[in-house]
Length: 356
Image 1 (tube, one colour):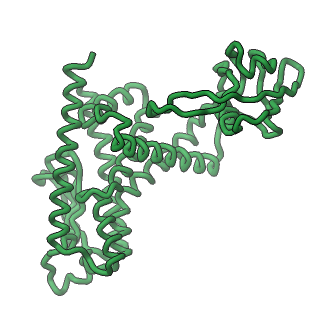
Image 2 (image 1 turned 60 degrees about the vertical axis):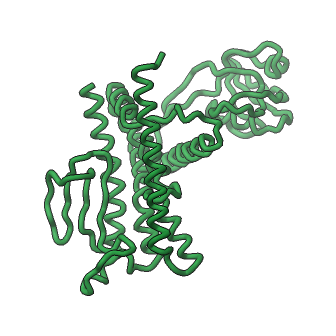
Image 3 (image 1 turned 180 degrees about the vertical axis):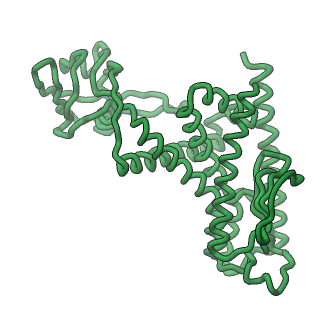
């Protein structure tokens, strides 16, 4: 339990610090005055004031905030501070300041993946055939266990994933698969068949297969800096896309809201990843950072995405929304988040006391 709490504090602190630092740095870049930079909410328990900014640690460690001069629509601003006010900056600068928070979380993931890939490389499953389904296209074509796939239609294949992608996207057209079988190189012609399967969201999808399984052989591929950077961008994009798609599927009802978890589940997962080693724990931070970034881009008032949505409306109608309209939207956003918090805490408690 102690390790879970400690790991949770580390994860949350890193994510909040990076998020709020994104807002802070871009605000200062554009000349906006920052009154408070807080890790946590509630009463101030420690800190230091430098210039006009109070850098503080607050009592409730479930978030953070950057308080800028003029960041409220009806803020009273001294005449001498107008040049420092957020709400007196051009629209594109305000947009970038707000977007910098969630973007920083995505950037953190890229940096973490870059470091991990440079240090550990990436595991690659070799395109070596293991089990072959009886009566499958591969069986009829004469493919055998331990065959090593070299090319498909002349295209080099260096991993099981690459092989699978080519077959899946074949559209059922005949493929020429070049394999290494012992000391021989053999060309085999095989036509993939269409099969219905379940995707990650439990939906039925059609895909093309030849009916083989991997032999389980793998190796670690070391990456150059450009390769690691490219791979880190791809990894971040894939997880971000999956996160966004999961949110859509949950709204559609394809995914149950029971899968949502709150602080308790995150603490348990953080503790588990910490026990599995530093690399797993750091990867977990990157994963949560992507989730936090995507969630904050949602157009829900109170979240950064809600403010960005207001700015888009302002760009269209050429004036800010009325203070009353923003207040009503903020109240609705708070209600939505409150319901969401109740739901995730309920799910956490249900897992603890009623799981199994």
